[in-house]
Amino acid sequence: MISGIFILTAILLIGIPIGIAFPLIVIVNAEAWSIDWSMLPSTTFDAVSSFPLLAIPLFILGGEIMNRGGLIKQLTDVCDRLLGWAKAPTGHVMIAASALMGAITGSSVATVAAIGGTIGPEMTRRGYAPGYTAALNASSGLLGVLIPPSIPLILYGSIVGVSITQLFLAAIVPGLIMVLAMMAVHGLMAKRILVSGRETVSQSMSAGTEAFAKFEDNTWSVVVKSLPALFLPIVVLGGIYSGVFTPTEAAAIAAVYALLVILLGRTAKFGDLKGIFHRAAMTSAAILVIIGLTSVFNRALLFQQVPQSIATFATGYTDSVIVFLLVVNVALLLIGMIMETNAATLLMGPLLAPAAAKFGIDPVHFGIILVTNIEIGLLTPPMAVNLFVAARTNNVPLSSLLRYLAWFLAVVLVVMATITYIPALPLWYRYL
Image (cartoon, rainbow, N blue to C red; front, side, top):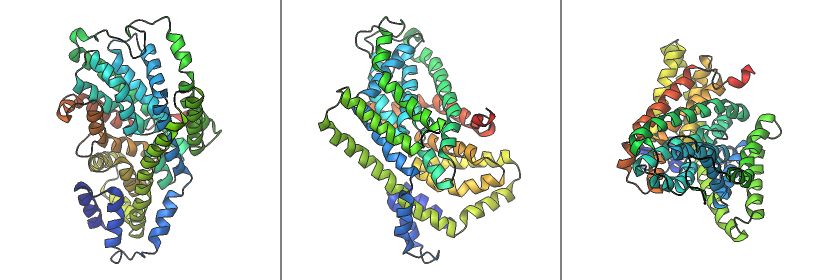
């Protein structure tokens, strides 16, 4: 089985699609692993028919509706006004808007594409190097994974059997720490990137304003106009955390709410719905196919008792939880570099969670550790999806983006280590 895992990694690296690679390994090794082929269809169906996983296509649909209906633009306008007092404010707006986008869609790639397309051109006009704009766009896109609701956290909770609501609660403080850390790095970097450390005054993203630096008289009119968009994350997260509805029900409410807002507000037409639903369906189908087919490999791992073997090895190798977490962090960072985030979560969750439990690590805390580690792979080649999407969205070569990435990557690693070794941060809600 260990050789099968290495072969799987190898064929993923040469470009075999994830949805094909996982079941292919199982089919080729079915006889050696004593696996009955007849179980494959039922295993795949059972994996995707889970009620919690229904949240994924619904959150994706909500994000598509908001993007097409202009609600994302409204959110960025509010961030524009409220952060106008800061030096180098446009970068702070990009970070804050990415956090808000993450609180609605749970998708990092969607966050990078939407925020880069709306704020990226304005940053360039205000004097930022295009490569720096793309690097900030890619880095702040990580908030789409960490800020709840989060698709990888939904996957982890479903496959490991952990409360998704608790995972969402646990992600709030780490997400806010990540936001503040990125803003701090941006504030320092802007002094070097911008002439005199300040942005060039140009027309604001909000029509009719001149600069971020002044709190304009019509700020409150912008806020009032954006209330429907601002109310959405409050409804979603407030309903989940108060126990009024489940994350899946929250996803459905978010999609319906966003649809009503854009139709009643006439920011989209009925004719636009076909394209919105098509894009959401295609993205959701790709993710669910991966989930269904990776479940086959996960079932094979259980049959071969690989998670139990890893847990036994880990507990026999060291009795120090500090050393164990260090080894796990390094391993997950490497996995994140070569595997897609959702697939890595589905693979490594069942593998490592039993070992973490042997060390007394809370499964909710471990879920935050796992997802935070794996999401860094979105910034580290060869996968590095965020880098490629940010480069394309901001129309810059990848090489110009990489020269500005080191500081953001460094602060993400520091936040990750802090989350790992201070469990009170993700488990804050248990002390209330």
